[in-house]
Length: 394
Image (tube, rainbow, N blue to C red; front, side, top):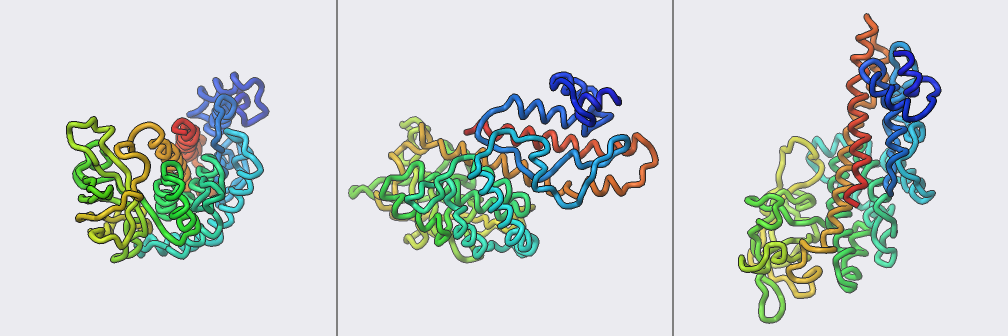
């Protein structure tokens, strides 16, 4: 075991390939050695725009035979100890520092209170707008930061560590509404809605899921019938909509809503269109706010009801029948990447104290120490794999 541990990284490694092979053999005996070898291989063979996050450091785990210092507080620099998956720019580093400061000072202190109360923290959302986080991928001419997919992943990653519920609402607004509109909307639509959405003056979401079809966009029942004047009449209901209600009785401000604009004779992928529907339109109402969820309680989830809602022709986003084809799907790839980043980093939070617990544990046997270490190590491997996988939707 000592030879495998040395080759894998507890001591100074020789060749990287040899270290990884030794790490695989030693995983059950020396988990930290194994993960170090694996992480070096992964960071060498993967290239792309996404960064290795900076929270959990598996090498801080203290175990019998190979001791390292540990702390109950996750290191903000631990990502540098294992290397980055991709090369961050100075702009990305500055953004991460900004979000980390925002999370530590304003997000973390309120997370438990708002989740217990099942309340959406609207002032915190507006504060994110003041910091320029709500439109991080939007062109500067519309009030955004003009950054890339890496920047979006960084923000989601840092927010999810302290408050996944708030991060979920942030994701629905910044990706499903703001980035979607920025990518698919016309110049006039972007000028009209994006500045307020990027500043936090308005909160948006996306209406796709339905009570019967779920997220099967091609199986949806909501319809938008075109009228003689070019407008549309929208009917149907959307379910499980994040940011659907900012309170028990108040709708969110605007939503990008998917609806069928053609009958069964048209190919399903060419029968769905996208509309921007605003609060206050006659016939647009809050059906119910969903409460007592298993988790993410500070992120409001609601049912939206559309009863003969008159939608102006200028609120059609993109082409009629083009909501699910071609470039219209591009924003969903970035959304998928951000979701993966959110889930991958949120799972690191519960085990941050694990090194301290392991360090303080009175070991009665050599095997027992490894049993305590093995679970967080395996989890860290899976988390690292999830973070690497983020690049593929982009």
